[in-house]
Each structure stands twice: as C-alpha cells, then as structure tokens.
Amino acid sequence: MKLKFLPLAAATLLTACTAAAAGDDYKVTVTLPQSANGATAFIVDYDNGAKLDSVMVENGKALFSGKIDKPVLARIVVDGNRVGNFILESGDISFGRNTPVKGGALNASLDKAMAGVETFQKKAQALPQDSTYQAGMEQLSGEYDAYMDSVIRANADNPVGYLFFLQQAYELDLPALRETLEKYPSMKGYSRTAKLLAALEQKEKTQPGNKFLDFTIKNDTVSQSLSDYVGKGRYTLVDFWASWCGPCIRETKVLKKIREEFEGKNLDILGVAVWDEPDATVKAIERHQLPWPQIINAQSVPTDLYGISGIPCIILFGPDGTIISRDLQGDALVESVRNALNPAPAQTPAPAATPAQ
Image (tube, helix red, strand yellow):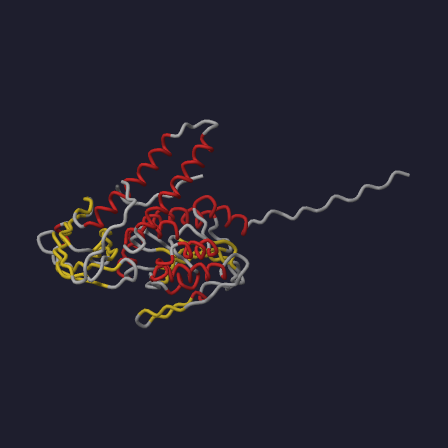
C-alpha cells in the first residue's frame, strides 16, 4: 500500500482561508534565467488554460501587476515552457524556478497544508520494515485520507481545496470519482473536473478488446490520421507523449529496447505528440533521436478521445486495430508486446486414459 503525496514542497491547514475581495491588486515577480530576456511570460489559469496576464521578461524577471476578482490556481509559461504553479491572489507574490512561492494568504496556507502532507511522508518512511509494516501503513493511510478530507472541506471554496481534490481525483476510477463529487459538490464547477469525468467515460470505451477510434490532425498542408498507421495488418505501439514530460522521455528508452528486440518483425511504433508546441516537439525528437514516425501538434484531440489524463500513455493495437493493452510502462509494457507477438503455444490436452480391461 502506498500513500499518494502532492508533488509540492511544504505543513498543517485545517481552517479555511478568506478569498480576496473583488478587484484586489496583485503583484507577481518571477525570477528567470537571463536567457529568457525578451520572451513573453504568461500567467495561465491552471484549470482552463486561459491566459490571464502577460509581460516581457527583462533583466531576468517577469513583473506582473493587475487586479483579480477571485483567487485562481495558476502557472507561469515562458516560450511554451511551464515555470511553476502558484495561487494568483491579492498581495505581493514572488518565486523562481528553484525558489518557493512567497506572498499571499492562500499561498501561505497551501505551504502549510503541504507541510502536513510532508509529515505523513516522513511517518511512512519511518515505519519499521518488519511484520508490523502492513498494519502500520494501513493505519497511516486512514489518517492521511482523513487529513486530505479535512483540507478539502475547509477550503472547498478556494484553490487550496481544489488542488488537494485533484490529487485524489486523478487516482480514481469513474464510479469512485462520481461518488467523491457528491462528497465535494463545489468541485463540479471546475473545467478539469468535467474533462476528467469525460476522460474516464472515454477510457471505459477504449479498454483492451475494443477497436481503435480514429482521429485526424492537420498541420499546414499535412494531414495525418491514426488509421494511416493502425489497423493495417501489423501490431502498432502508439506513444502519446510531450517534449516537456520527463517520464515520457524516460519511457522512450523502453520503446527503443522494444524496437531493437522486434526489429524485422510485425511491429511498428508511432509517436503522437499531445499538449505540446510543435517546435518543442521537433527539437525533442532530434535531441532524443526518436526514429519512429510522429503525429505532431495533436494537442488534446487524441487524449479526449481515448480518455488519457496523464502521459506517457502507450497503447498496443493489434493488426486489425483492436486494443490489446494500454497504460503500461517499463517491464510490463515489454511483456505485453512479447505476449502479443510471441504467444505461448496452445496446450494440447493429454489423451484420455484407456480404461483397464
């Protein structure tokens, strides 16, 4: 059993924070490398992707100022690269690529809440590795779930609660998510929640045993469809990835291993770049020497269709386009390909024994 922890630095929030009044002023200072000078930095709404503010980077800093009607979970994007997440709210806020967020009541509360998560992580690491471990982990997991629930309930009307809700939501299947939304009804109003619900519904439709769902991506004068590669009489391993995704890049080593093992056999590999800028995709293909064909600038078209909420997502299609496996990585992915291309021979039943005369 494992505890799921939010991937942010930080300690214990059990009381709600007051939202900023309508039209409150904010000042945000983001420290960036000098190489970013002259680039445009954006504040982007984490929930729906809307661009809320923009400035030019000068002297290694992006200096934003304006008014915000209500606090928003946001991120900084520079030249298509994500710099960091924070809560856009009234007050003076500052941070950098490797420095924590300072300023703002909700940012401080989030920091405190994250320290509570860190406490559970340390407790889990300190559990004795003996026969008592399982029982200790189960008790700690129950306490952790209660803590997460207390934070969400206390902050149901602000981005702190929303961020903690998302940490749970992305681990749930469709029935569990619907049940959780009845528990936290205020979370139904977020765009990511609606997309996650739709994604889980599509994920159910694209489980192994179902036929592939086609899509077409047009870039300039080039048009590419999944059906150009899938359902053509060969096994096809399709990697949905992005240049900024570290796990995606690491998984390409596994794909290269599979490609080498099955070279000359009935297997093709296809990359589909999602949620990414085309130029960044092309540079990543060259930098990491990815030799298989690519569908570029697919954005959310295939991820919406296949219910993909996290990448890398790798799907193995059979010669007729039937989905054989999905959402596997590492050794499990290699094994699924081996089993498909080198199926174990059918066992011939032993002849029945002749009755004694």
